[in-house]
Amino acid sequence: MNFKIEDKGDLTIVRCVSEKLDALIAPELKTLFLHHSNKGSNNFVIDLSHVKYCDSSGLSALLVGNRIIKEKEGSLNIFGLNPMVEKIISISQLDTVFNISESEETALKNTI
Image 1: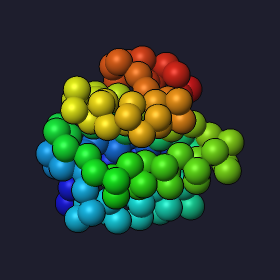
Image 2 (image 1 turned 45 degrees about the vertical axis):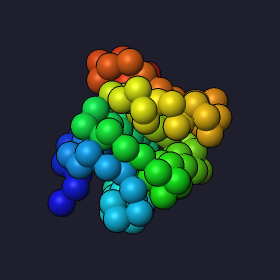
Image 3 (image 1 turned 90 degrees about the vertical axis):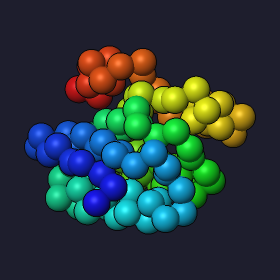
């Protein structure tokens, strides 16, 4: 398992415990978004503090999650970005799409 899940009703905290969010891990993240949103979770907080590398598959998984949550009128907040991950998100101009917070506390406040 590459993720730790904290289910709190309509809020799900997803913690990536892998150092890579790539083609090997991304399908699992997409499945988590689908599974938990189908169980009634409309809000997600994604902890990427352990992630040192993210490729297009990882970005795609985050975009899928963002789309699923927006359809349910919920929110998705990401925090704990490593400088390299932050750079790839910025270069991809996804910093204008994702809600990015500096800390878990801020992400939780922005979600609820």
